[in-house]
Length: 260
Image 1 (cartoon, rainbow, N blue to C red):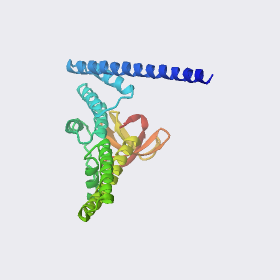
Image 2: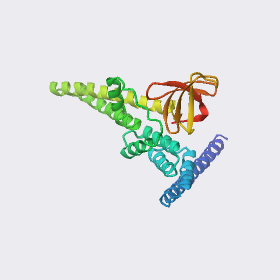
Image 3: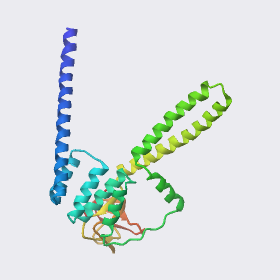
Image 4: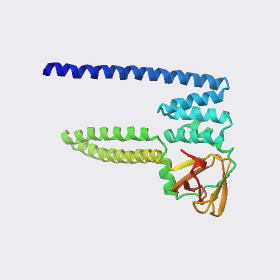
């Protein structure tokens, strides 16, 4: 009886595993087929069709900077500015140092009607941000893990070497690698946290009136236009409190923006 139960348990597991593999291959082939159609439609100038193709892939939970970048290019060619900026920003979150993403994002921003001057931040904070976005979160994670592995190797040298010079060298190199590993881990964690928080958004309406309070009776403060990037501070019901680059704060309806 035990033997029968054992085999009757393994057989369904094997079948399920095979079915998962088959469905995985089928899904991969389907995505590649849609991706080929998207590229072909873009080259033919069929930007609406290309957009539909890329959005289908994203709906299947695929995500990459290249995917968002190509989708953004399609939106930009189709004269859909806020959607283009939104997807350039999403691509930049995943690969902050990509030259093509940053260049096209800056080009798209020149078409935004709002010309908001950013308040210069504290120089130390600006420097830390420049270091943080020198690599993507995945690259910082790789640096952190690599540093930790090298740390363990130098620890072994320190423990088992009989030469004083090698012991000292291993110790100080280990300290440096420990600092690099921890620092890289913190930067990777912060970047991932920013991506998960979604506390930045793009205005999607042609013109939006920013209010002093979360209701229609609030005082009109200023206007924002489609494509403008805002930070999200708080929410009350269907209202979102936002902050723009020059430090001004106000409220607008959540339906007027799309989170990055």
